[in-house]
Length: 611
Image (tube, rainbow, N blue to C red; front, top):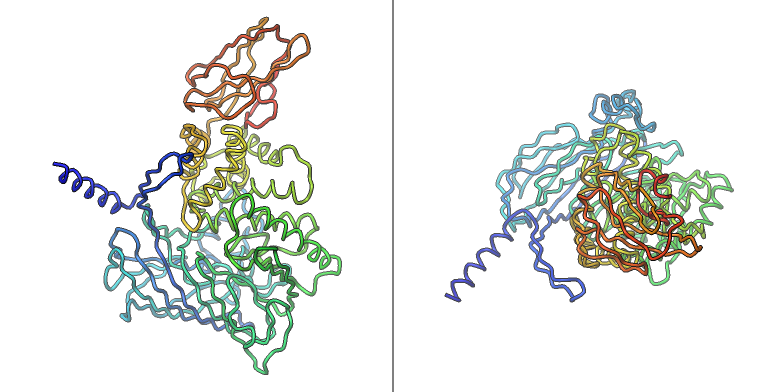
């Protein structure tokens, strides 16, 4: 009988690991957890050779992609993203921009006006699977591929592709000849394998924003005019061949029209580069950390170039802050590159516009660098969980700026709270479960992703305690770096750290538009009655001022949390959610009462918090 039970358990374990849904069982964090996990993720190894013509902005590419199916599923098709196809009149991005009520001004109707030599495209001419030609069809920004043979679980196959492409006029993130005259901002520029995970394929069309990629290794060779300097993802392999001292910026070009830059990037899920013939290239070493690279235009004014110089030691401090408060930066280099159309994060680098004030330069660098952790190392699906990368990044970069720039804010995230409350009261809010492309208004997306996402973490600190939040962020990084975490992973991490039940918080704040609104209803002698008006429950901090002038802080646990945060306040009985009012009695006569005196709850009506 014992042997039979063991056999049955083995079959059940194998079955659960064969499901597409990750299955994780973990003991309590305080007891040095051991995890049995059926988590899996796909793997890619890219080799690409690119030949760029800087006069026509067209390039030819050869790509060899070794794809490993780590899933328990048989794959009958695969999909590639062809992002540059979005920059054509009549594309989904073009039409969406012209039909949404508040279009991104960087896009507007500009795509519709592109001429044939200004559009973007990626054209796949041949594609083979293990040497056999296979059928493929380009459908907008997606390449649909019928396999010659299904890819079995655990199988590794090789795809060989020939393609050519044209870099679009700079409109959104990628492109040529930006407003600041950057020649090439090369983001999302190659045929990129779509991600397949426990939810299936993520072959989303490129309409406006957000990405999701497969973890892997990149080996990329870029042939380009000898006068151009390249910066971006990966480690330069051949500085001597191109006559360029990459750590020093010294130049001694060979006598040839084109040079081939060879980069290798291990364990990333994207590859980005920028190139310009007028880049200044500075470097600065982070103590016990990566080499920082700064590439910006020599044609900037002297004042602007001085700002770039002044920003560099602050970038060192930012790298140190994030490594200390989240987890150590694992790569050997990071580059801040003038390019793009604002600020956008990529693997080992960011593209930012460069004609900024000093404070704006530091601020955008702080935000984009923080994305290295919240999206490039903790690689959430941005399209489905945009608030996890934008919001968590906004939270930690606000804290970093407060320290690095000596801002002195008692609540560095206060603007995010105010933005969220404005949206919640506007009638235009949609749940954080909304796909990034499905928001009715761009403003609603922006406030939801950046501000409400930041409040999610800040308010989690209010619920479980700031020390527990700091531990949660570090454990989240330790457990999920180089993976694809989901919303459940951050909330379960917080549960393991704090010992509290927190599913209600993820449900109400992220999956609904329920709001927080608590009211001091009555004060009668020593008796205080509070009222829950909003649907969303919370544990409550209350400060009471007595008629004798003394004050006392109270903490009312939320019953469904099954515990309480560490606090020095007087602990009183739980408040169960379904009861709209709560009354407690103090030992002395009461003069006034204030709910949440530190304003750490996202209560949409602060006026009724005091009486």
